[in-house]
Image (cartoon, rainbow, N blue to C red):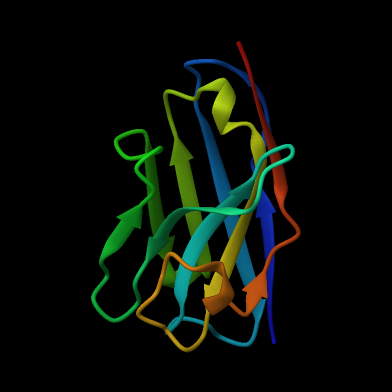
Length: 125
């Protein structure tokens, strides 16, 4: 079992920045794909960013490309999401997730077995 705990959410003005962190504990998951998803008010959960374990390739949703940066530190069992140029439409609960099978479909929520509890990000206009 892998436990994920996110932190770093908060209230920020449009154009501002936040850095989300997700710390993993329990079973080692260095071989996992890791990703960030978000769910805005009245919306379905959507993919934000992910790192594909086997190649280190990084994927972003078009809506965040150029503004968000995902990174991982296996030594610290941490995955981070640096968010800049935040917009009101980025307001959501942000979840980190881990896929122990390192599936090819890194953008699909159903591939991820482990999820954090979420951290709220609110961007005011």
